[in-house]
Image (tube, rainbow, N blue to C red):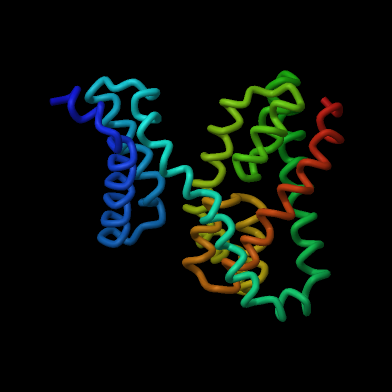
Length: 230
């Protein structure tokens, strides 16, 4: 039975979708921020692979087709941004300052923590692109001499963490401005965080989508500047 299932052309894709659906059901039922559909989905997939002793390569071979949807899904983020173009033009200075501040805070935070914990240069540059989307982060990490696989893991953890705690952070600091919320989420936790921003509202989603692109470009430019500092 195991062999029949794992050799199925769509085994990985179906498992991923079912795991995410499980996360959605638990989210609706429990209504807790920590019960994040993406986090639940990851844990569920890991559980099935471990329980059935299935190699990751076997799962990935049939799950990779879902990743083909990532590019068009990312492009679709331009739709809410287009719908909020007037708002963007009105506040473009504040938007750019906010994104730049977020990128500098991310890179500067990694530098300070690397100094505090006496990390090696290799680990330091591995962590620098933690807050940008995976596609860009891998390239930055490899170019600076980091460990790409760890970079991917850190980016995913950062995104999930941002998705889970975003609303709690906004309540704690009494942040109610939609533009500020969107920029904060997109700059700090890329696409995974943007999923939460879209739940909060159209303005939040549009600003978060914009922040993903601009923060990614700024990190590509500034990461090589920060890299030699340690």
